[in-house]
Length: 294
Image (cartoon, rainbow, N blue to C red):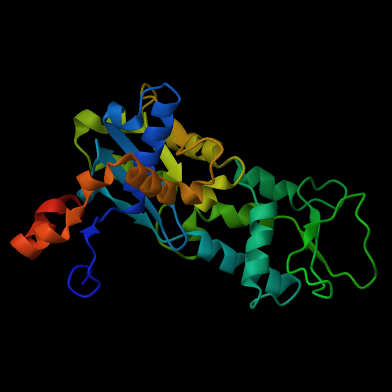
């Protein structure tokens, strides 16, 4: 289609984890450190919009048979928060953009869910997680609200959304999908299953280079909780090293930035197939070029 219908001159088929890993490797190399690809083995954890994927790599090649998927992503978290708020407070089923903003501003990953859940049930003054979010009135053209503080000035017309345990139960779905009936393990279990599916000789090396991408990895304490859950499942003498794909960079943009960097550096030609080659060898050229992603 890309060559015959749309007349592309070049075509490259790369999944988001591959481009994010390219970006992470380049970012580290630019800082004078060893690039991730030079470490040979990596695991990219992509907590995406619709799903979360765990993709182990050997150099630049994904280990396809070991890729695992968790059926929880940013969209499900937002929809779950919409349902909870609509049931407990205001009808928000048509306010996806607003609730997504609420999720990003107030939610965080609990490092001890059961203990924090008890704290979230305490009375108003003793509850450390209780906060109030002022919903937009839309009169002034604003479509997003804000977290109420002691200095915030509100009126009787303002609608106040009170949140407490919702702040931790929403991100918890990434680690315990069974809470809402999804019969799967969480992200930590997906990583261990993925690594176990790889050759035994490289399993310990994969844990030393876990790369996080995707918007939901921005939840506070996400890395700490993931490390904590993995530590309980991984042999004690194996090192666990978790990092984001780029320091100070939105993790949801790492794949795009990796692709952009690949084109600017001239490396794109190493990953792409030209129209001329396609016309000479036909569809088999695509199979040979992109056999990693077949």
